[in-house]
Image 1 (cartoon, rainbow, N blue to C red):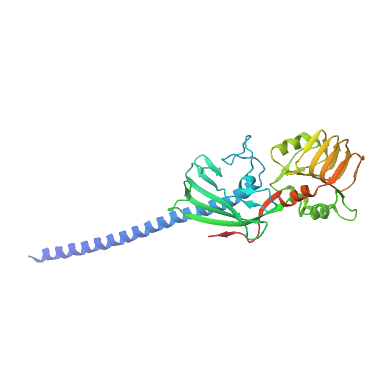
Image 2: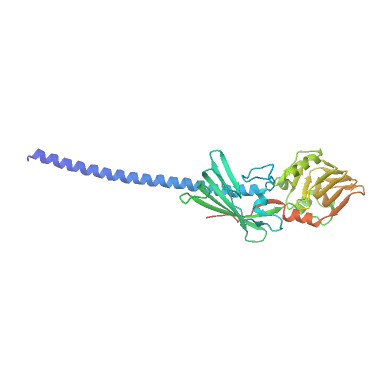
Length: 336
């Protein structure tokens, strides 16, 4: 073997060693790339699960405050007999008791699909399942939402999972009921503190609650109010002067109504009201009119002697303990 052949063999060996080193380097780089891709995918799924769980909390609170009657798909239905609140809570008692009803929603190609106490939605995608439980104290509820990146009836074991919970409570429609059937604001007390003393917040804040149904009506609003009540509303806000003209029946002992009018309220004819009416001033000319609950006026309150007005403790207690808006309590949110 000559010298040139020996030099060629050494060059080949060195070249093979360099190629092997490059291959090892490429394999290491590819491994790191795969790890980063897997981490990015896991992070994206974890973010989806986190957002789904948080959406579950917000969606449930919104549904609890929605007065529409819904079907098994959680959508308003004319033939439905129950509201979401009645599906998931026993509303016949002062302290709400959660029912053993599961609710889930999935984000599919056609948008969100939900199941309220029935079969799980058929879509397959990011979703959440929510459950209401007894809270840490009486009058409070624990809302638990499980969110996942891939939901097909349940959160799959191989999908990212997030669990959020929040403590919620009812913000009463009328937390401090009046002590008399007819209450008139004292001349020495401004209108703002007078309202806040009864309702626990300013008139603007009370009106902006989701559970409050705003009716853009002035004058004879009996028909508009009747339609809103038929659709499930019990807390009503009107922007100006309102006339209720009989024959007209509003509210029931189980579901009394609370009407807040920014202007004057006039009762005319055979009006039957189960609930409370609050207005800038109240007047009546009412043969055969009946009010079971209370009337509250920021100004004057006057009419003939035919009004049958009685303070009804059960009606007022329903407005204090069973009607209003569910809200999150500060410090009650946790994630796992």
